[in-house]
Structures are given as C-alpha cells and as structure tokens.
Image (cartoon, rainbow, N blue to C red; front, side):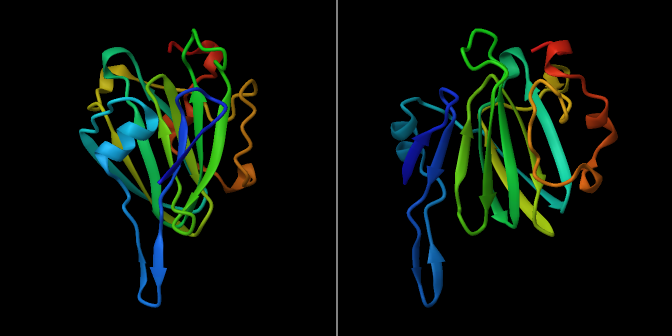
Amino acid sequence: MTLKETKLKGCFILEPKVFQDSRGYFFESFNQNTFNRLIGKNINFIQDNESYSSKGVLRGLHYQRGEYAQAKLVRVIKGKVLDIAVDIRKDSPTFGEHVSLELSEDNKLQLFIPRGFAHGFIVLSDTAIFSYKCDNFYNKESEGGIIYNDKDLNIDWVLSESEYIVSEKDMLLKPLSQTQV
C-alpha cells in the first residue's frame, strides 16, 4: 500500500497493491498495523458503515463535534463517487480548504479523513456502494454540517446542480461561516 498526504495536513490518499490475473483481482483493503505505521498514528476504527446511492445523490457535508469527532477511512466498493474532505480545524493553516478525490471500484483508492474535517460525496456512476470506517461512535447531539454549495468553499461537485439529489436535512445546512465547528 502506498500513501500520499493531500494539501490538508493529516488527510491521506491510500492506494492498495492490487494483484490481478485471469481470475480477477485480490487486494488487502485494510491492515491495522500497516495503516497505523503509514499514517504515523494509532487509529482504532470501531465502526464500519456502508451506503448505497444512485447517481446524483449528494451526501454531506457532515461532521461530529467534540468528544464524538470522527476520523474516517472511506472507499468505494461499487461505482464511482467524488469524495470531499473540508478542513474545519479552526487552528489549521488550511481551515476552510478542501480536497476532492474520485474514488471508484476501478482505482480502489481510499481517503483517510482525520478528526476535525467535514466530509461528503456525490455519486457519479449509475449507483455506488460507499464504505467507511469510523474511529468513534455516532452521536446525534454532536452532529454538524455545512451546506454543499457554500460559496466560500467553492466546491466543484462535477455534475450539474440539476442532477443533485440532496436530503431535506442537508438542504437546511448553513455555510461554514455560520456554522459552529
């Protein structure tokens, strides 16, 4: 597995070593020891989540506050998404900046998103199965979010806005400048 740090400190792209032959492929999607050694931290994932979505579904931008903040390791099992991580660490030199990365069943890339980030994705293929590991349990009282079309963040979601499918809850989110992080 290879590791590349993004422009946002602590946010990493992981590329597994894939073994392919006429039968198909094999790769190790996660190894706790290798992962911790590569990122230089001891992260203990305690929950795995999976979502199935259709093209245009936009989920996010979500985060957990305080003691319930979550680090995530995300990947796509089937399909293709544009994944977004936004640095919301107030003391960070890259506060308010984001990275975007296409994750797909073909490229098998993973994105590690540390605590202190908001996260979201949009489905680019007809359907997608999205998987993520979390290092903390979800707590409803600690959830927060940022509206997907925050003008200051200026995220290019790739698809035209007429194709977006956004939940009512996510449509009510505020811009980062009006959000308690």
